[in-house]
Image (cartoon, rainbow, N blue to C red; front, side, top):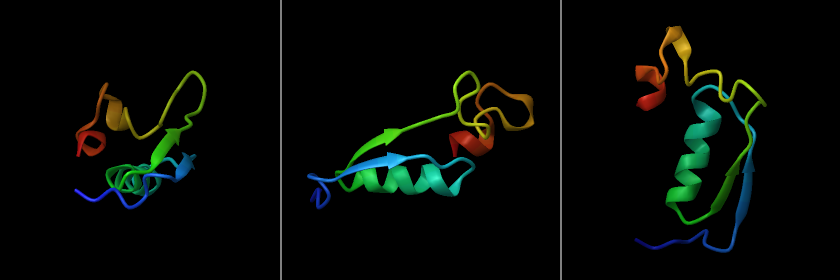
Length: 59
């Protein structure tokens, strides 16, 4: 796989699906992605609908 973003650093501050998904795609393309989450709670979508790792988050 060609890592076209290998010299790029991204700070990902998003929550709920689209922000983290974009960060994942940028990482797949080679970017160094730093995900920043809310202290103490993390990404609110991770435990959506009461689970430790919701099906939505895992997808």
